[in-house]
Image (cartoon, rainbow, N blue to C red; front, side, top):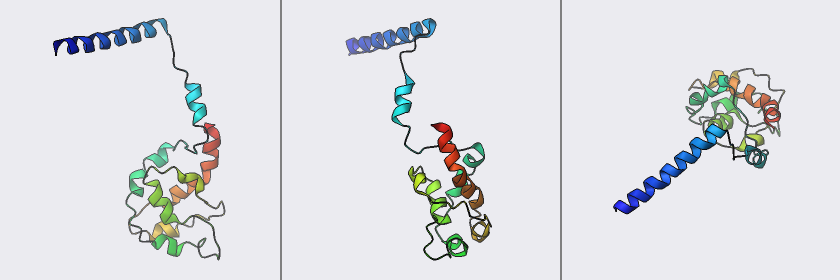
Length: 141
């Protein structure tokens, strides 16, 4: 048992000294460009601080679908817009399917969905985030 402890301490000590020497000599053996290039097309984008603070609010969604019922965009026959309820529910979790959301630039942000929400979820801000998402995606690549 004592030998295993000594071996572990020796290995830990050598790794520590390697790290210190690399820091002193400013040796950077890690090249992050390969890592970043491997994940360019994952559609993950930085969420602005304004919207990050609202994320706990989105998790209050109870899927009552009142926001969908009052949305004028969804009243259009054969509409392909993503319902506000799906946005709120998805954004409250770490889902990476944001690039599938079809948020119409013609959304008037009338706030009817937000007014109908019994949980007071800030849907207008979420819709605005999804509308600027293409710029956020291009700014990270």
